[in-house]
Length: 459
Image 1 (tube, rainbow, N blue to C red):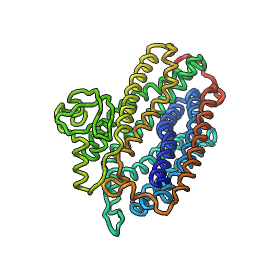
Image 2: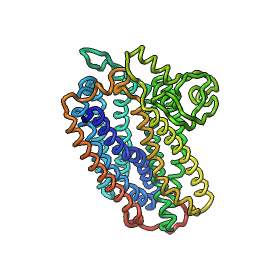
Image 3: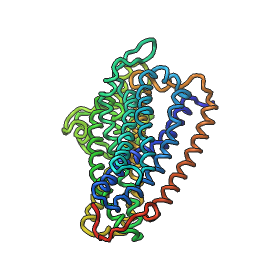
Image 4: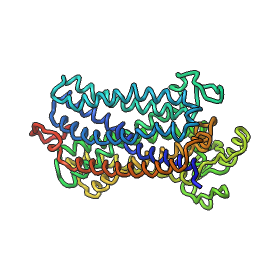
C-alpha cells in the first residue's frame, strides 16, 4: 500500500530542494549587481554598466526559475498538509502573507522598473530600483525564515481549542532561531553569487575572451567570496552552538554522537549503524566536539540515547531519533564544501592581485566546476535543518505524522509527485541551458557600450 505520509514528505522535499537551488543565487546576485550599478553611478564608467547588464541578464534567468518553482510550495500546505495548516495556520500564514504583499510585490515591481528603465529614468531612481530589488529579495527570505523559525523554535503562541494561536507577533520577529538562521542564509547567498561570478569569469579567462572585463569580475567575486565564505563559517559555528541548547538531538545526530560524554570527541568519519544505535567504526578527534560546542576542550555534550530518554519522558512514547546517516554526511558535505570554498577564494584573490591575469589553467578549470560547491553546501544545510527536526513538523508541538492531510488519497499525491518531479527536472535543464548559453556570450553581446581605452582593471 502507498504510504500517504512518506509520499507527502517526498513531494515537499523534492519541490523544496529544487526551489532552493535558485533562491541563494537570487539573494546574493541581487546585492552584487546593485553594487556594480552603484559603481557605474559613482564613476559613470561604461565598463560598470557593461558588468551590471551582463550579470543582470543571468540574474533574471535565475529569478524567473525561482518564481516558477516557488509557486507550488504554498499549495502543498493546504492540500498535503492540511492538518498542519489547521493547527498552526494563524501563525504560519502571517509571515507568508507579508512576504507576498510586502516583499515579493516590491521585488517584482522594481525589477521591471530596473529592466526597462535603462537610459529612460533618472540615474538615481534607476539605481534605487535595483537596490529595492536586492532589499526586497532578502526581505522575502526574512519572512519565509520567520515562518520556518517558528516551526524550529515556537515562540509567541498559546494552545487553544487544539490549535496554536499567535499571542505576540514581536516574539516571532525576535525569535533567536531566526536571527541565527537569517544571516547564515543571506551570507550563503552572497557566497553562491561570488562563486557563480568567479566560475563564469574563469571560463572566459581560460579562453582568453574579454580578459579585462572578466579579470575585474573575477576580482569582485574573489573579494566577496572570501568575505562571505568566512562569514558563513563563523555564523554557522555560532548557529551550531545555539542548536546544542535548542535542538540538541539535531546536532547529536549530525555528529553521530550516541553517548553523552565530557569531554566529547569529534567524529570526523564513521560507519553509522542506526539499527543498533552505534557507529560500527569511527575516526575521532579527541575533545574537539566539546570545543566546537562550548569553545572549551571540556564540557558535556548529550548523546542520542540520553536525549531519546529525555524526550520520551517529556513527550511520551515514540522514536525521537532522526535518520542519523543522512544528517551526518550532509553536515560533512556542507562543512567540507565550505572549507574548500574558503581556500579557492583566497587563492583566487592572491592570483588576481599578484598578476594582471589569472594564469594557472588548472585553477580556472577548477573554478568552473567550483560553481557547484555552494549549491552542494546550501542543499546539505537545508537537509540538516529540516531532517534534523524530525519527527516534529513544529518542534515539540506537532509531529510530522499528525500534520499530513487525512483526506488526500495517496494515489493523488503519487501522481503529483511524479508530475512535479518531471516538470521541475525539465525546468532545471532549461535553467542550466539558458544560463550556459548567455554566460558563454561575450559581454558586448549582452550590452552595447562605449569602449574605454584604458588598460587598467576597474576596481
